[in-house]
Length: 168
Image 1 (cartoon, rainbow, N blue to C red):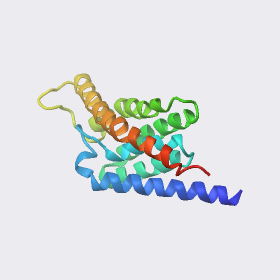
Image 2: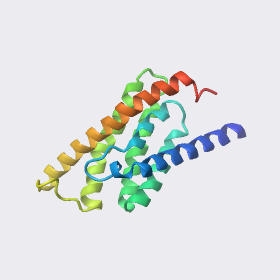
Image 3: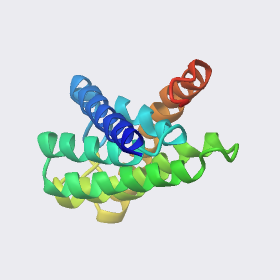
Image 4: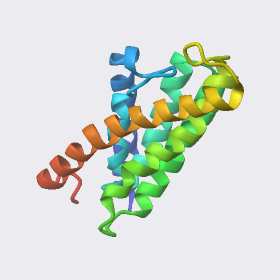
């Protein structure tokens, strides 16, 4: 029992650290209106371990505190938590291709509000008007998430599945 708890804690901490390092290394692409957060490729990890849910959430919270503001840390982490929890619920159900979709949807719905209200980004290019800007930000975030989660995350999923790294 103790070994399992220690393993989950260690895996979660490692996932949080990897998420944070990837986000900071690629910080130019990791925030604001047009973003491809490379670390979001890790959204497939809940398909392998329950430790990924708190690990991804903690990693996102910590890095958003370093890069942004409290609203980004709270609501960005909430999007990550919700996506990771949905992905974990899909574990073993043969629906692994839906895990990245949860990440795309939750981030596209939540992050535009963080950008608009938390960072005060009230225009998108020369476009103004709250709902239009929020819609364009949602589209932009969704595209970036598709690139990160499907373009990078699904190859990671298949690589990890093949290596059996998370099998106990």
